[in-house]
Length: 269
Ligand SMILES: [Zn+2]
Ligand SMILES: [Zn+2]
Image (tube, rainbow, N blue to C red; front, top):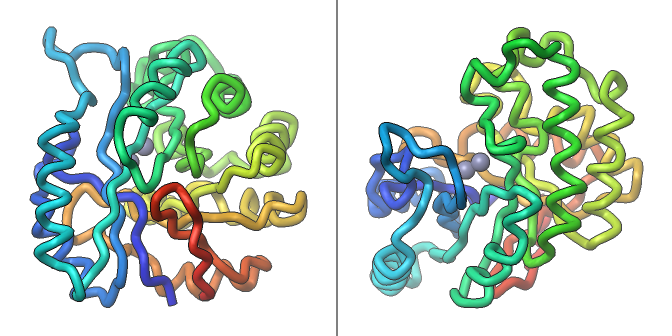
C-alpha cells in the first residue's frame, strides 16, 4: 500500500484552484497517512499576458500549511514542500530559497528547456520529436550539476505528455543515450527519482517516467523513489496508487521514501 502522496498543488500554485483543505480531505478519504504539498516555484517562467506566473507567495503558503498541519494533527500528516522548476543558470537562486525556508521536501523539475515549455505546442515546431525529447532529457544532468539542494527529480519524461506522438514512439532503449546519464547522475548524487502518476491522468497508460525507465533505474542500482500524483484537484489525489503498489515491487522496488525535514523515511509497499 502507498500511504503518502508527495506531489500536490493547490491555489498557491498558478495552475490550480484547489483549496488545501479539499486536497487533505480527499487524501483522508483515500486512506493516506501523509500528504506533502509541493507548490510551483519557477523563476523566469515566460510571463503570460504580461503577468508573472509560477511564483508562489511563500509566507502565505507556509502560514496556511502550518495552520492546517495543526488542525489535522492525529488524522493525517501535512508536510511542507516545494517544486522548483530548474534551469542551470537558476542554481544559486534555487539554493537560496531552500536555505531560507524550512521545507520538508524539495522537488526539482525540468519544466523549461532554454526558457521554453514543451507544454506549448510551438516547442515542437521546426524540430523532430526525437530531437525535442532528447533536448529535454539533457536538461536533467545539467540541472543536477547546477543545483544540489533537492531530494527528488520529478516526472523525468514529462515531455512525452506533449509531443506530437506523445509516448507512442518513445521507449527507454530509443533514448538510452540521453536517459541513462540522467538516471546515473541521480544515483551517483544520492537523489531520489520520482514516480509521478500524472501520466495516467494524461492518458499515457504509464507513470512518468515510463515503467521501462524505472526498470532501467533499478538495474543501474537506483533504489530511492518518491511517489506523487501531481494532483491539481482533489479527484486526482493518490491517482493510480493501488496500481503502483503492485507494479513497483514487481520492478524490484521494496520501499518508497517520504521526506520529512529533508530526511527520508522508507515505507514498505
Ligand atoms: Zn512539474
Ligand atoms: Zn507538479
